[in-house]
Length: 314
Image 1 (spheres, rainbow, N blue to C red):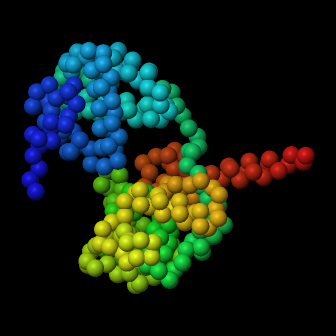
Image 2 (cartoon, rainbow, N blue to C red):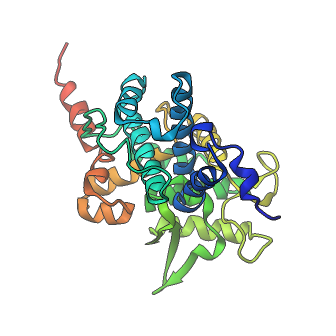
């Protein structure tokens, strides 16, 4: 099917499409410059929301947008500081793209400062090592779906894989090197990240592929199913499918901690550091650009707090 850029540009907000050339340049930002699908959705929301805000205030010409407008928009956002900073980053990058394309002379978002925000600890809930074992042991390995779910959870725990990278994996992203099984992950920005498998993960993946080989030689690794005990299809699981699966598995295992897909990444990093792993190595394993980001996933301090609070002998 041919992709008609002109037709697609008709969906660009009016602020960013006063003429076909500007609309096309804006659309190219989202199709050519932003490669990650999640980032693209978030940045599109930011652009559309800002355009709507401008429209309500009679700002319909890009050249009339000034730093004071961007600053006022940012100040009225009723979002958490990290979300506000993301909105501002999206606008800065979009306006930069338009400056380079000679649509506008200067970037009105460059001088605008976001809210001060510094987090020493992330908010993603984690599981204890015992809870992970209980969860994995509760999964029935006699069905293709059970084997798939066990392998997927194991992948996120033992390789610190993001769920977005996990669902994109193909069968040939699992390979043998120096007598060990390795996995290839396509992370943010399309970066390839390769990791050796923990022996448990190696067993989980081998059992899964042996019992449920894909119909295509290089099909998706984690595939959807017809019903909870049905045969696996050729189509890939989506992130929403994984989230539903995790909620169902956690409830069936009797685990009360409210977790999401990212919890397994945080759990793996925490357990690695708790058992003597080094932060800079965890950073490489998690494919983080900064060790500060990796540190947000470290929840060893939670156990210290739990131990100390039990000293309150009432």
